[in-house]
Length: 58
Picture 1 (cartoon, rainbow, N blue to C red):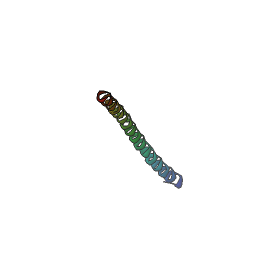
Picture 2 (cartoon, one colour; picture 1 turned 135 degrees about the horizontal axis):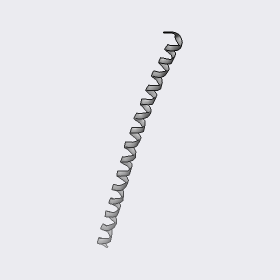
Picture 3 (tube, rainbow, N blue to C red; picture 1 turned 60 degrees about the horizontal axis):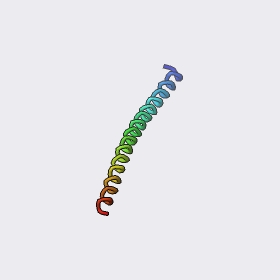
């Protein structure tokens, strides 16, 4: 194997590692976005419950 082949192999390893990191980051982002949606919905429900509670108490 010559120097160019070794350099290409090393570059491919680095590219694969970066692609794996990107895939993990994209997955983590998707999970966080889903959590944000869920928490936003829960927040809406809690605000509505609080609003209804205040109306009943008035």
